[in-house]
Image 1 (cartoon, rainbow, N blue to C red):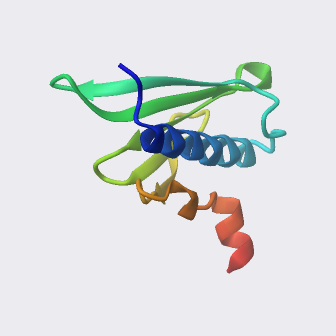
Image 2: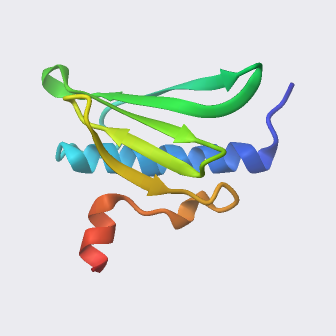
Length: 105
């Protein structure tokens, strides 16, 4: 079964958002560390994605995209949530990482 091109585009945009946000959190260079992902299902239905980034010194950051809630929850190396980013699943590019939101303010 092939993914819907629109869904694939949304996933790629959310991946970029997550990568930038997690890298900003620990002052890491974006795209220098691999971003893993795992689909999350509930009763056989896709409900989100779990993302993780492993940086230097065993730093592990993570995020969960809750598709139905249209939000990405970001977690630091200590496991505490540091951001909840609203995401329009029809246009995930609308959401901005926390650093960009602070600069715009």
